[in-house]
Length: 317
Image (cartoon, rainbow, N blue to C red):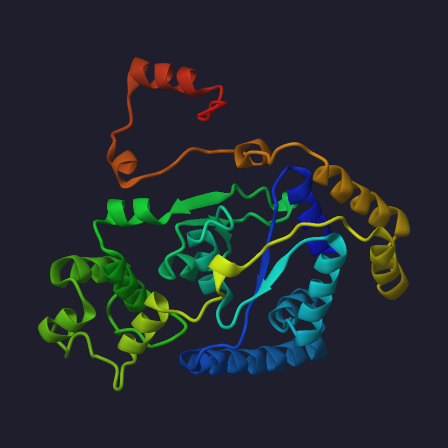
């Protein structure tokens, strides 16, 4: 139901979404998947203890940690999207990598994901919180990859190496190197190879059999959908099919489903796609230069506040 309403909310505001589903995880991800399994096992143990102690708050917390998306969940989401007339893509491997490929090919405007790996896969534009519920009131964040590289003074390869140092699903990190030290080392030595040759390995022990080269290759040359030849079609929703599936099988309210289907149909009859700033509250951009500016004081501060009281974003900008 959440997917149904959030999709309608986007379509109702002139946004044409495309969903991308994960394919087979890469071999390098096996270590991360093992860790996740261990965390699930620990959560199951803690849930049992909380249930025995009657701790309602902990029961809810650990139950949430055990939620897992299954193949059945994915298949039902794909069926729902088909009935709604919304296109979806099945990625051969990581979904974020194929999202990046779709943006690069000009098939979509941006990749909307909570996983910042989208930038590491080189998506030109990444958006976060696009599908967050209205109740959370989270402003949508938009990242432009070229601007990120420009502000950080890095090449794409150096940015990937930085992300590997900061931690990814595909290999270990160097103990003792945090965000500040990582970017200092990348700016100074330009690559992980040079860092390895120049750092004090007693202070920063290099992991044995470190697979950073394989991780780098996966980010720079991922297995992705053939975006150039892909056709994305938004079609009329199947209202009766939606009612049969969502009401007959899933026991949701028929009135709500029919109202949603009518919104989808009405939105398809609109003339142009809406602007994202018409849909979301725009809070302005933050760059490295912006952060360095000193805050005005006294009368100048009051004047600045008065000038921005109406908002930071103007129509047509």
